[in-house]
Amino acid sequence: MFDIIKQLQDLAAELAETLEEGDRQYRTVGDGGPVIDWWFVIDRNASYYAVYALMQEPVESGEELPDMPVPCGRIEFRDVSFGYDGKRPVLSHISLVIEPGQKVGFVGPTGTGKSTLAHLLLRFYDPTEGTILVDGVDISRYNRASVRRQIALVQQDVFLFSDSVRRNIAFGDFDGSGEAIRRAAESADAWTFIRHLPQQIDTPVGERGVKLSGGQRQRISLARAFLKDAPILVLDEATSALDNLTEDQVQKEMDRLGKGRTALVIAHRLGTVLNADRIVVLEGGKIRETGSPQALLAQSGIFRRLWEKENRKRAKKEGVESCSL
Image 1 (cartoon, rainbow, N blue to C red):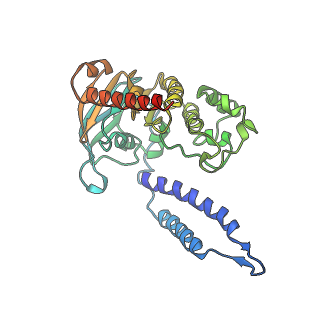
Image 2: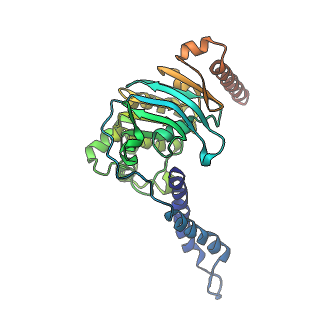
Image 3: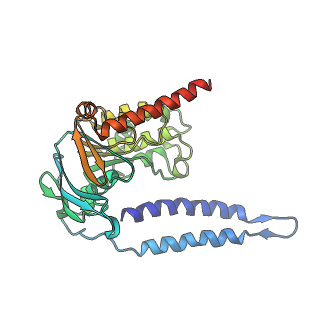
């Protein structure tokens, strides 16, 4: 289902482009009348068939199950394994407990299953083996929509609709009052730029938020999470697409968002999890190390090697930039 949602997001943007381009395709050349780029029409027509095919996908099962009650936030991965389409496991026998209110960082090389853990918690997929429990109850006993209502997700790729800032923040909570939306924007430090927009919070953001910067789009995503006010927070490489200065600014809002919640932070840059209560190092789909940031840095293990490698790359980059001044 998660794959379908992502594909529909991409196709929605492509179809919007199709409509705009269609208006431009009818143009007059001398007295020859309208000229149509038929290759464009054929290519874009395939998008409609793709949407139709996706709409034929089966609806997620289990919607008749009861709703998940508001949890305290204790999460347990109990001997969890998972592989896409039954292929080689991405995760193998993961056992981990996260206590309510804890902030746990997940690090490791690309492709080790960090984001997959979050997708399993959100029930975009179900484990091949093992169980995921929240407050001691298997989350597969609840319908998927109710599980997701208890989890706020902030990702690297922020999807914004071609609508106003207000409606993009209210995404997922259309009952939110105007005052609640403004408070969420202020909490995410988004109001600092919203108040300078032509129509302030009612300003259209353009297709996929094209009229906003990366940092502004990410703050709108954070405002959504503040408005949702869920007891569990997942930050999935939420700042990896930002430059260092913007990342430092957005990181402060993320730290504030995580207070009082159970937070899973999937890190692209290790510095974003140095204030975590615990760090889990994944490699080859398995947990290789776990402990406080200070304890892992004191060891000669994977986390320390990743940390030293990241510092060398940063020093090299800063050296090149300083030489170019």
